Amino acid sequence: MRQYNYPKVILKTGKERSLLRLHPWIFSGAVKNVIGNAIDGENVAVYDSKNAFLGLGHYQKNGSITVRMFTFDEVEPDREFWKQKIQNAVNLRRALGYLDGGDTNVCRLIHGEGDGFPGFICDYYNGIVVFQAHSRGMYLQEEMFAEIFREILGSQVTAIYDKSDKTVPKTDGAPAVESRFLFGSEAEKEVLEYGMKFYVNVVEGQKTGYFIDQRENRHLLSQYSKGRTVLNMFCYTGGFSVAALKGGAGSVTSVDSSQTAIDLTVRNGDINGFNAGVHQAIATDAFEYLDKMEPNKYDLIVLDPPAFAKHVNVTNQAVKGYTRINRAAMERIAPGGILFTFSCSQAIDKQTFRMAVMEASLQAKRKISILHQLTQPNDHPISMYHPEGEYLKGLVLYVE
Ligand code: SAH
Image 1: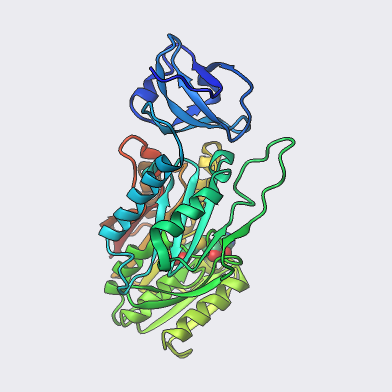
Image 2: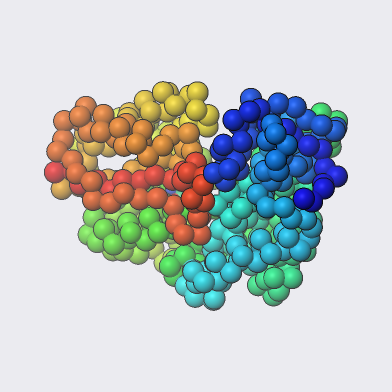
């Protein structure tokens, strides 16, 4: 048996069960004791109460998840180990066709637990790579990751930006995390998604710059758009709006509370050649807009709100939010209308979201059926052993 020089985390009796099923999170309540002085971000070796080895992970005292496991094998987590993991993730995206110079050059390169990187995501914007660490352990490895990405991607990477200032939990005594370039200095790029152009600014944009996870759902929407009058609520950069216009929508109205988002939406409409006559973008509150909207004006509506529930203890409130906006849209959509409705809250599971939408349907008193059940795309893989990784849920509804 290999001996590790890392602090040892010993679990309480029975708490090894989820790890034996390869689930990568150890909650604080599962830890019996820690041998050695473990500090945030450090590698720790994890053992069950009888001292059997379970794997290696990153320690994080603050927060409910004390250890995020990055391997269940008895291995040396050296540079070669991480390089192999990154290579595997990149190989998958290559196999899926996102890095071959085709009509899509934006994708997620590393999707946290789904790629064996709990606490880390990495997005690719036509050359600009954006890192985001959600744990100090991943954050501390980012300079090494940047070197490895440059080795693996070669000329396909033009800049690497780390955007972790708001996502790494605070550690007493440790310096504050600041976002910074790890390579190059390019902040903005035009990317291609199914041939549509989008302007992305990784430094100023929300999240890592763009919502890549809706790519396939936007593509599906374009197939429903011909001749329709479309309302895109919570439009951000106007991804669904451009997809609808590409699909031949008669007109598109985009709504977001952020003026910056509206400016981006207009810009993205413009660079794809759609003129102001068919596309209107309004900076206003979505709840107000839906409540005041005149009935039968739209026959295709998209509802893609921000995560209403960031934690499991606020799910009730979130469910009410989903019910409210869906009800408003269902009450006012034209007969024969199509509603694309989403939730990206990890804390709300598929069934809970579906119940919220069912409640809205009942309240709206419309006959409604499900045409598609949507989720995140293949560059956002879900580990079989970590069902929480399935965070994006969507329904396409037909409203008679
Ligand atoms: N559909 C987008 C992503 C939406 S992200 C895409 O495909 O890229 C959620 C958006 O909701 C953000 O742009 C945020 O500014 C906006 N938002 C948040 N609260 C809002 C509210 N009350 N009314 C309108 N927009 C809101």
